[in-house]
Amino acid sequence: MAKQTTDYQSILSDLKQKKYKSVYFLMGEEPYYIDIISDYILNNVLDEPEREFNQMVLYGNDVDIKTVINAAKRFPMMSPYQVVVVKEAQNIKNLDELSFYLQKPQLSTLLVFCYKYGKPDGRKKFMTEIDKTGVLFESKKLYDNQVPAFITNHLKEKNVGIDPKATQILADYLGTNLGNIVNELDKLVIGKPAGTNTITPELVEKNVGISKDFNNFELLNALINKDVFKANQIVFYFEQNPKNNPLVLTMTVLYNFFSNLMVYYYLKDKSQGAVARDLGINPYFVKDYQTAAKNFNGWKTMEIISLLRTYDAKSKGVENSAPDGELLKELVYKILH
Image 1: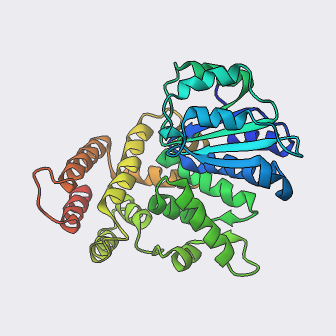
Image 2: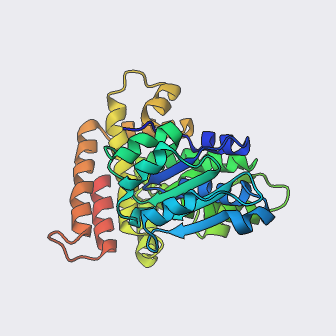
Protein backbone atom coordinates (compact mmCIF):
# COMPACT_ATOMS: atom_id res chain seq x y z
CA MET A 1 0.00 0.00 0.00
CA ALA A 2 1.12 3.57 -0.56
CA LYS A 3 2.98 5.35 2.19
CA GLN A 4 0.64 7.47 4.28
CA THR A 5 1.43 10.86 5.76
CA THR A 6 -0.34 10.77 9.12
CA ASP A 7 0.74 14.12 10.54
CA TYR A 8 -1.54 16.84 9.20
CA GLN A 9 0.69 19.49 10.75
CA SER A 10 3.63 18.46 8.55
CA ILE A 11 1.36 18.77 5.51
CA LEU A 12 0.33 22.27 6.58
CA SER A 13 3.95 23.16 7.28
CA ASP A 14 4.95 22.22 3.74
CA LEU A 15 2.02 24.14 2.30
CA LYS A 16 2.97 27.24 4.28
CA GLN A 17 6.49 26.95 2.83
CA LYS A 18 4.94 26.63 -0.66
CA LYS A 19 6.25 23.07 -1.01
CA TYR A 20 3.38 21.81 -3.11
CA LYS A 21 2.54 18.31 -4.35
CA SER A 22 0.59 17.46 -7.49
CA VAL A 23 -2.02 15.36 -5.68
CA TYR A 24 -3.45 15.39 -2.16
CA PHE A 25 -5.69 12.45 -1.32
CA LEU A 26 -7.30 13.23 2.04
CA MET A 27 -9.40 10.39 3.43
CA GLY A 28 -10.74 9.00 6.69
CA GLU A 29 -13.49 8.87 9.27
CA GLU A 30 -12.67 12.23 10.87
CA PRO A 31 -13.63 15.12 8.54
CA TYR A 32 -12.01 17.81 10.69
CA TYR A 33 -8.42 17.39 9.47
CA ILE A 34 -9.56 16.89 5.87
CA ASP A 35 -11.35 20.24 6.04
CA ILE A 36 -8.39 21.96 7.69
CA ILE A 37 -6.00 20.94 4.90
CA SER A 38 -8.35 21.49 1.95
CA ASP A 39 -9.52 24.86 3.30
CA TYR A 40 -5.93 26.00 3.70
CA ILE A 41 -5.20 25.08 0.08
CA LEU A 42 -8.32 26.87 -1.15
CA ASN A 43 -7.59 30.01 0.85
CA ASN A 44 -3.84 30.34 0.51
CA VAL A 45 -2.25 28.76 -2.57
CA LEU A 46 -3.64 31.33 -5.00
CA ASP A 47 -4.09 35.07 -4.63
CA GLU A 48 -7.59 36.47 -4.90
CA PRO A 49 -7.27 37.56 -8.58
CA GLU A 50 -5.75 34.18 -9.54
CA ARG A 51 -8.63 32.18 -8.06
CA GLU A 52 -11.20 33.42 -10.57
CA PHE A 53 -9.63 31.49 -13.44
CA ASN A 54 -7.46 28.93 -11.67
CA GLN A 55 -9.46 27.52 -8.78
CA MET A 56 -12.21 24.96 -9.16
CA VAL A 57 -14.32 23.05 -6.62
CA LEU A 58 -16.03 19.89 -7.88
CA TYR A 59 -18.44 17.57 -6.08
CA GLY A 60 -18.34 13.80 -6.31
CA ASN A 61 -22.09 13.53 -6.82
CA ASP A 62 -21.93 15.75 -9.90
CA VAL A 63 -18.80 14.57 -11.76
CA ASP A 64 -17.03 11.44 -12.90
CA ILE A 65 -13.32 10.75 -12.70
CA LYS A 66 -12.78 11.70 -16.37
CA THR A 67 -14.17 15.18 -15.71
CA VAL A 68 -11.80 15.54 -12.74
CA ILE A 69 -8.79 14.44 -14.77
CA ASN A 70 -9.64 16.77 -17.64
CA ALA A 71 -9.88 19.68 -15.20
CA ALA A 72 -6.54 18.73 -13.64
CA LYS A 73 -4.82 18.64 -17.04
CA ARG A 74 -5.62 22.26 -17.83
CA PHE A 75 -2.84 24.82 -17.71
CA PRO A 76 -3.20 27.77 -15.33
CA MET A 77 -3.92 31.25 -16.66
CA MET A 78 -1.60 34.05 -15.53
CA SER A 79 -0.61 32.01 -12.49
CA PRO A 80 2.05 29.39 -11.73
CA TYR A 81 -0.60 27.02 -10.34
CA GLN A 82 -4.21 26.00 -10.56
CA VAL A 83 -6.15 24.31 -7.74
CA VAL A 84 -8.79 21.63 -8.27
CA VAL A 85 -10.56 20.43 -5.11
CA VAL A 86 -12.90 17.44 -5.30
CA LYS A 87 -15.30 17.34 -2.37
CA GLU A 88 -17.40 14.25 -1.58
CA ALA A 89 -14.82 12.22 -3.50
CA GLN A 90 -16.17 9.06 -1.88
CA ASN A 91 -19.11 9.31 -4.30
CA ILE A 92 -16.98 9.13 -7.47
CA LYS A 93 -17.00 5.79 -9.26
CA ASN A 94 -14.03 4.25 -11.05
CA LEU A 95 -11.46 6.13 -8.98
CA ASP A 96 -8.90 3.56 -10.06
CA GLU A 97 -8.79 5.31 -13.46
CA LEU A 98 -6.89 8.04 -11.62
CA SER A 99 -3.80 5.82 -11.76
CA PHE A 100 -3.23 6.79 -15.41
CA TYR A 101 -3.16 10.48 -14.51
CA LEU A 102 -0.84 9.84 -11.56
CA GLN A 103 1.80 8.36 -13.85
CA LYS A 104 2.26 11.80 -15.42
CA PRO A 105 0.40 14.43 -13.40
CA GLN A 106 0.14 18.08 -14.37
CA LEU A 107 2.88 19.65 -12.23
CA SER A 108 1.20 23.06 -12.23
CA THR A 109 -2.01 21.60 -10.72
CA LEU A 110 -2.77 20.93 -7.06
CA LEU A 111 -5.43 18.20 -7.30
CA VAL A 112 -7.09 17.66 -3.93
CA PHE A 113 -9.49 14.81 -3.11
CA CYS A 114 -11.65 15.01 0.03
CA TYR A 115 -12.74 11.42 0.65
CA LYS A 116 -14.68 11.48 3.93
CA TYR A 117 -16.07 8.85 6.32
CA GLY A 118 -13.97 6.01 4.99
CA LYS A 119 -11.12 5.16 2.66
CA PRO A 120 -10.64 3.26 -0.61
CA ASP A 121 -9.24 -0.25 -0.79
CA GLY A 122 -5.53 0.16 -0.17
CA ARG A 123 -4.76 -2.46 -2.84
CA LYS A 124 -6.14 -0.24 -5.60
CA LYS A 125 -3.47 0.75 -8.11
CA PHE A 126 -4.07 4.48 -7.75
CA MET A 127 -3.48 4.19 -4.00
CA THR A 128 -0.04 2.69 -4.60
CA GLU A 129 0.77 5.42 -7.12
CA ILE A 130 -0.06 8.44 -4.97
CA ASP A 131 3.06 8.37 -2.79
CA LYS A 132 5.17 8.79 -5.94
CA THR A 133 3.55 12.07 -6.89
CA GLY A 134 1.62 13.40 -3.91
CA VAL A 135 0.30 13.06 -0.39
CA LEU A 136 -1.88 10.26 0.97
CA PHE A 137 -3.35 11.29 4.30
CA GLU A 138 -5.71 9.33 6.55
CA SER A 139 -7.70 11.38 9.06
CA LYS A 140 -8.52 9.00 11.88
CA LYS A 141 -11.13 9.50 14.57
CA LEU A 142 -9.73 10.06 18.04
CA TYR A 143 -10.29 7.55 20.79
CA ASP A 144 -12.09 8.84 23.89
CA ASN A 145 -8.85 8.93 25.87
CA GLN A 146 -7.18 11.11 23.20
CA VAL A 147 -9.77 13.89 23.39
CA PRO A 148 -8.42 15.61 26.55
CA ALA A 149 -4.99 16.04 24.94
CA PHE A 150 -6.61 17.41 21.78
CA ILE A 151 -8.54 19.97 23.85
CA THR A 152 -5.43 21.03 25.74
CA ASN A 153 -3.31 21.31 22.59
CA HIS A 154 -5.94 23.21 20.61
CA LEU A 155 -6.21 25.81 23.35
CA LYS A 156 -2.43 25.93 23.78
CA GLU A 157 -2.12 26.95 20.12
CA LYS A 158 -4.30 29.94 21.03
CA ASN A 159 -2.15 30.67 24.11
CA VAL A 160 -4.98 29.68 26.44
CA GLY A 161 -4.70 27.20 29.31
CA ILE A 162 -7.39 24.97 30.76
CA ASP A 163 -8.04 23.47 34.17
CA PRO A 164 -7.72 19.62 34.11
CA LYS A 165 -11.21 19.26 35.57
CA ALA A 166 -12.66 21.53 32.86
CA THR A 167 -10.81 19.47 30.24
CA GLN A 168 -12.37 16.25 31.45
CA ILE A 169 -15.85 17.75 31.73
CA LEU A 170 -15.64 18.91 28.11
CA ALA A 171 -14.17 15.62 26.90
CA ASP A 172 -16.92 13.61 28.59
CA TYR A 173 -19.68 15.86 27.29
CA LEU A 174 -18.54 16.61 23.74
CA GLY A 175 -17.51 13.14 22.60
CA THR A 176 -15.05 12.61 19.74
CA ASN A 177 -16.47 14.82 16.97
CA LEU A 178 -13.58 17.25 16.51
CA GLY A 179 -15.66 19.78 14.61
CA ASN A 180 -18.06 20.11 17.54
CA ILE A 181 -15.20 20.22 20.03
CA VAL A 182 -13.38 23.00 18.17
CA ASN A 183 -16.59 25.04 17.86
CA GLU A 184 -17.17 24.87 21.62
CA LEU A 185 -13.54 25.62 22.44
CA ASP A 186 -13.54 28.64 20.16
CA LYS A 187 -16.72 29.89 21.89
CA LEU A 188 -14.96 29.53 25.23
CA VAL A 189 -11.93 31.47 24.01
CA ILE A 190 -14.11 34.28 22.66
CA GLY A 191 -16.34 34.32 25.74
CA LYS A 192 -13.66 34.30 28.43
CA PRO A 193 -13.35 37.52 30.46
CA ALA A 194 -10.61 39.97 29.53
CA GLY A 195 -7.44 39.24 31.47
CA THR A 196 -8.40 35.60 31.99
CA ASN A 197 -6.17 33.11 30.23
CA THR A 198 -7.39 29.82 31.69
CA ILE A 199 -10.61 27.95 30.97
CA THR A 200 -12.23 26.89 34.26
CA PRO A 201 -15.26 24.69 35.05
CA GLU A 202 -17.17 27.89 35.83
CA LEU A 203 -16.50 29.24 32.33
CA VAL A 204 -17.54 25.90 30.84
CA GLU A 205 -20.82 26.03 32.73
CA LYS A 206 -21.50 29.61 31.68
CA ASN A 207 -20.57 29.30 28.00
CA VAL A 208 -21.27 25.67 27.09
CA GLY A 209 -24.13 24.93 29.43
CA ILE A 210 -22.58 21.95 31.23
CA SER A 211 -23.24 22.14 34.96
CA LYS A 212 -19.95 22.27 36.87
CA ASP A 213 -21.56 20.36 39.76
CA PHE A 214 -23.84 17.88 37.99
CA ASN A 215 -22.04 16.13 35.16
CA ASN A 216 -20.44 12.78 34.38
CA PHE A 217 -17.11 13.89 35.81
CA GLU A 218 -18.72 14.70 39.16
CA LEU A 219 -20.79 11.50 39.12
CA LEU A 220 -17.65 9.46 38.59
CA ASN A 221 -15.91 11.39 41.36
CA ALA A 222 -18.82 10.66 43.72
CA LEU A 223 -18.63 6.94 42.90
CA ILE A 224 -14.86 6.85 43.33
CA ASN A 225 -15.22 8.35 46.80
CA LYS A 226 -18.38 6.36 47.60
CA ASP A 227 -20.28 9.57 48.25
CA VAL A 228 -23.79 8.12 48.14
CA PHE A 229 -25.60 11.42 48.71
CA LYS A 230 -23.74 13.29 45.98
CA ALA A 231 -24.10 10.40 43.52
CA ASN A 232 -27.86 10.29 44.04
CA GLN A 233 -28.12 14.05 43.68
CA ILE A 234 -26.45 13.84 40.28
CA VAL A 235 -28.55 10.86 39.18
CA PHE A 236 -31.70 12.83 40.06
CA TYR A 237 -30.41 15.84 38.09
CA PHE A 238 -29.67 13.60 35.09
CA GLU A 239 -33.17 12.15 35.28
CA GLN A 240 -34.65 15.67 35.16
CA ASN A 241 -32.36 16.73 32.29
CA PRO A 242 -32.10 13.65 30.04
CA LYS A 243 -31.34 15.51 26.79
CA ASN A 244 -28.20 17.08 28.22
CA ASN A 245 -27.15 13.90 30.04
CA PRO A 246 -27.73 10.86 27.79
CA LEU A 247 -27.27 7.52 29.50
CA VAL A 248 -25.06 6.19 26.72
CA LEU A 249 -22.51 8.91 27.43
CA THR A 250 -22.56 8.25 31.17
CA MET A 251 -22.06 4.53 30.55
CA THR A 252 -19.06 5.23 28.33
CA VAL A 253 -17.40 7.44 30.95
CA LEU A 254 -17.93 4.87 33.73
CA TYR A 255 -16.83 1.94 31.58
CA ASN A 256 -13.63 3.68 30.49
CA PHE A 257 -12.71 4.48 34.09
CA PHE A 258 -13.39 1.07 35.62
CA SER A 259 -11.71 -0.71 32.70
CA ASN A 260 -8.64 1.44 33.36
CA LEU A 261 -8.94 0.68 37.07
CA MET A 262 -8.71 -3.03 36.26
CA VAL A 263 -5.49 -2.32 34.37
CA TYR A 264 -4.23 -0.20 37.29
CA TYR A 265 -4.29 -3.20 39.63
CA TYR A 266 -1.78 -5.04 37.46
CA LEU A 267 0.68 -2.18 36.99
CA LYS A 268 4.03 -2.95 38.58
CA ASP A 269 5.00 0.71 38.82
CA LYS A 270 2.22 2.73 40.44
CA SER A 271 4.10 6.02 40.62
CA GLN A 272 2.20 9.02 39.29
CA GLY A 273 4.25 9.33 36.11
CA ALA A 274 4.14 5.63 35.29
CA VAL A 275 0.38 5.36 35.86
CA ALA A 276 -0.31 8.45 33.75
CA ARG A 277 1.83 7.07 30.94
CA ASP A 278 0.45 3.53 31.02
CA LEU A 279 -3.21 4.57 31.28
CA GLY A 280 -2.86 7.50 28.90
CA ILE A 281 -4.26 10.03 31.37
CA ASN A 282 -3.34 13.43 32.79
CA PRO A 283 -1.16 12.96 35.91
CA TYR A 284 -3.72 15.12 37.75
CA PHE A 285 -6.19 12.19 37.66
CA VAL A 286 -3.85 9.47 39.00
CA LYS A 287 -5.14 10.21 42.50
CA ASP A 288 -8.62 9.10 41.38
CA TYR A 289 -7.30 5.63 40.59
CA GLN A 290 -5.42 5.49 43.87
CA THR A 291 -8.62 6.33 45.75
CA ALA A 292 -10.77 3.95 43.70
CA ALA A 293 -8.32 1.10 44.28
CA LYS A 294 -8.82 1.56 48.03
CA ASN A 295 -12.61 1.65 47.76
CA PHE A 296 -13.14 -1.07 45.14
CA ASN A 297 -11.13 -4.29 45.18
CA GLY A 298 -10.40 -6.26 42.03
CA TRP A 299 -13.43 -8.52 42.36
CA LYS A 300 -15.78 -5.57 42.84
CA THR A 301 -14.25 -3.82 39.85
CA MET A 302 -14.85 -6.89 37.68
CA GLU A 303 -18.44 -6.97 38.95
CA ILE A 304 -18.89 -3.27 38.07
CA ILE A 305 -17.58 -3.83 34.55
CA SER A 306 -20.06 -6.69 34.16
CA LEU A 307 -22.86 -4.47 35.49
CA LEU A 308 -21.99 -1.75 33.01
CA ARG A 309 -22.19 -4.21 30.13
CA THR A 310 -25.55 -5.52 31.39
CA TYR A 311 -27.05 -2.07 31.82
CA ASP A 312 -25.67 -0.92 28.50
CA ALA A 313 -27.62 -3.75 26.88
CA LYS A 314 -30.73 -2.84 28.91
CA SER A 315 -30.45 0.78 27.80
CA LYS A 316 -30.67 -0.51 24.23
CA GLY A 317 -33.88 -2.41 24.97
CA VAL A 318 -32.53 -5.87 25.76
CA GLU A 319 -34.91 -7.48 28.27
CA ASN A 320 -35.89 -4.05 29.57
CA SER A 321 -38.63 -1.45 29.34
CA ALA A 322 -37.53 0.83 32.20
CA PRO A 323 -36.60 4.47 31.40
CA ASP A 324 -32.96 5.54 31.43
CA GLY A 325 -33.33 7.38 34.73
CA GLU A 326 -34.45 4.22 36.51
CA LEU A 327 -31.65 2.21 34.95
CA LEU A 328 -29.04 4.70 36.14
CA LYS A 329 -30.49 4.64 39.67
CA GLU A 330 -30.23 0.85 39.77
CA LEU A 331 -26.74 0.84 38.32
CA VAL A 332 -25.36 3.45 40.73
CA TYR A 333 -26.93 1.64 43.70
CA LYS A 334 -25.28 -1.64 42.68
CA ILE A 335 -21.91 0.03 42.14
CA LEU A 336 -21.98 1.59 45.59
CA HIS A 337 -23.29 -1.43 47.50
